[in-house]
Image (tube, rainbow, N blue to C red):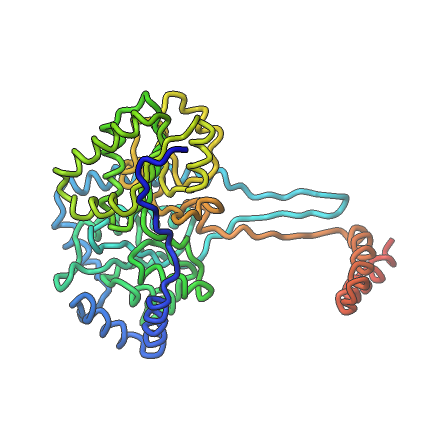
Length: 424
């Protein structure tokens, strides 16, 4: 491996100061309830309406502020997300099998009852996030989805976000952001039922709030700053590669970018092209910092080393700008979402194509995928057996329990063995 540019990459790590600060907020919110919610919303967002929840009339007023094009484009994007989630659901089948005579085991998939969906709106009004958490939950069969989105500071909602949340199927919509929104959903403040699961991304305070609320309710995943990796051989277009790296760099000054090349010549072409594009990029103030601090360019010895480097980084998004895409697709193991060929790009996945954009970061793609319809389902098992099977299993179980000195457990087996033996 040859390093052309080493900007490092900051993995998401626990920040003790942030952790203490968020713990204090959550403690106060839990104790004082809606009074604290209102106080923090006023303090952080200059927003303290009489009611944070939008009425049906207010939702329609928000939708009325959107152009027909915005509404149509949102419908197009959400149609793709819904179609993919519905297709995913068809792969999740119930199971029942007789593993030995008289012993029947099975599993079934049960949706959680209530999901709290957070649609971020900090640096950018990311209304496309609405479909990524709300639609898979509703396709899974979740009864109630509570949607929260932060206000435009001091002004109220972003109309396109409200339209997206409504189209996606949110049952209730609140204009509320930050830690106070997660507390409202997790604790079930006011007329809101406690969420069984929280879903959605946000800043470091939101991420820390989710981490501390785990156990009170379930989570989709914990995500840090966004990431992109690109594997590019000499058949790739350096201008397109540079464009896609910058597309993620504009997210956040802490966004990570990794370019794995197969030749030094291509690597230097891509870096030169990126610098040229960055000079005229409208969001260069953010993207430039991100590329400077977190951009990494390496040259691999061959395809297998390129795969190994990518798998070790375990990126949130991985693009393949290579001639033999099948070779990589068959061998790569660690990524949140894979974009095969130059015809697709991360922005397609983020907004319109139908796969989910709530994905693992900070190397967590080594052990988990992103949000999908299955995230909102509990796979639960059951068992049933005949009296004769109970006798057979009971005798083995009793001996196992006695060896472990769990005598009360053994008794539960022995009483069944005695009861059903008399029926033989």
